[in-house]
Image (cartoon, rainbow, N blue to C red; front, top):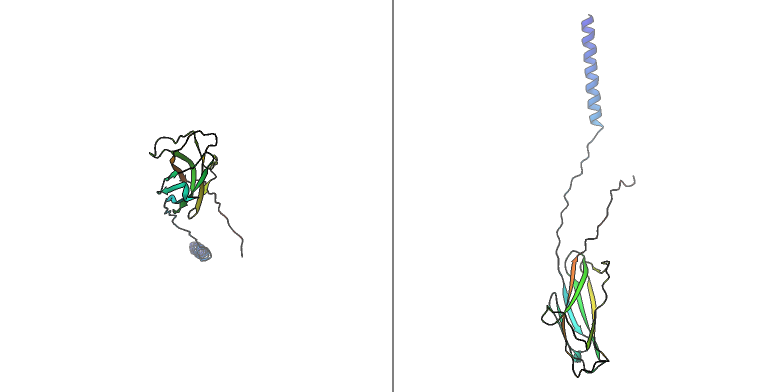
Amino acid sequence: MKKSKKNYVLIILVVLLLALAVGYAAFSQLLTLSGTATGTTTWDVKFTDASMNDSNHGTADFTDDTVTVNATLAYPGDACTVTAEITNEGTLPAKLTKFSLTGTDGTSPFSNSDVTVEIPDIETDGTEVIAAGETCPVTIAIKWNTDSEATSVNASFKVNFEYLQDTTEVNVSPNHGAHN
């Protein structure tokens, strides 16, 4: 009979163990969070307009990446401005990194001691950013120097701006949140 008592005890222990396992399984649950992160972007930063402040002072034409200015100034001290619109039609923010002022051939630097061409200063720390969908106007000033002794001047040049993808790091952190 001792042997049968041991068997009963063993059977009862196995049944209790199974009951505990089933009970634990009934009150526990595994939550799984799964997902996929994808990125689709477009890069499309370009000039979308260029205009001379006074049509008597010449012309300003543009392509996607260049503004060509042919300024006609009447006398020393005469001046005009050209406003170019730079538009970010892409989905990435764009950071202005530099501009170049060249002759009409697009390669040699613009140089004329009788004419001063001024373009706004660019922040060296890279804070000039155009967000996706935004437009940034840039005004260029052209002036026939007052101390010039020339009887006529050539103020024809091209302006190019260089933009790069703004790679400012975005910081995020997980959050458990409050219980409701």
